[in-house]
Amino acid sequence: MTQDTAALATTFLELHRAPTLLRVVNVWDAVSARTVAAVEGTTALATASHSIAATFGYEDGENIPLDLMLDMVGRIAAATDLPVSADLESGYGDPGTTVRRAIEAGVVGANLEDGMRPLPDAVRAVEAALGAAREAGVPDFVLNARTDAFVKAEGRSPQECLEEAVIRGRAFLDAGAPVVFVPRVTEREHVERLVAELGPQRLTLIVLPGMLPLAELEGLGVARVSYGPWSQRVALTALQQLAERVRDGEGALPGDVRPLN
Image 1 (cartoon, one colour):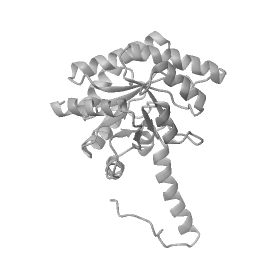
Image 2: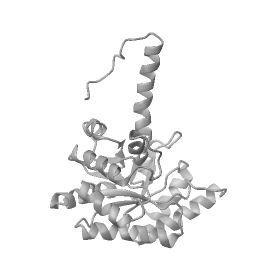
Image 3: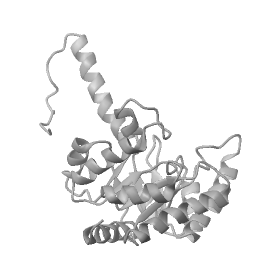
Image 4: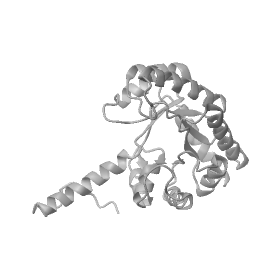
């Protein structure tokens, strides 16, 4: 960790605190990082654990070895001067140590999911991650504390999921997390309630099919949106469509291909 890392973390935190919605397209390797970073207006990057795992042939859910995941995270961070946040899933059994190692790899923020574990355990994980960041000299580390209240609904109604997300989100903020990530939220009333309960510029979301327009999310006070594995899926869809055209005898390249590597 260098002083530059701490300063970059402060910049990243300020991007979340600004009223302008932070829009982050997730990346999975060095070339995707450079490609997204080169787009004018891009202010930060985030890794997608699902996409990195898929790159190496692993299923999502901490099946990829941590060393391999962090090696790619480090390559992504080294490929850009922008702030980079890493998706660290549930912390690989030791959130504090995993965050410390991620900081050493060059990141200034991280996702940490609760997996709907008992709330005291999830809060302790948040505290361990933030404590490790402070000890590493990065007090403004942007921990994006994720609750899986909607992901792991397990028969609960949307309203029950919302209430659980509020309880867990508040607990993570009280533990020091600057922002709370609630994936699978797409309904306007749910976004409004979460912002009202957690505060403006405290909620982060993933863009899904049927999501509210980004301008509306910004107006509602959402801090950040990201794209998770969907950005890689967009790239893979284009690749598969090329293979389909080649199979069907259409050998010409699309006219809008860019020499980005």
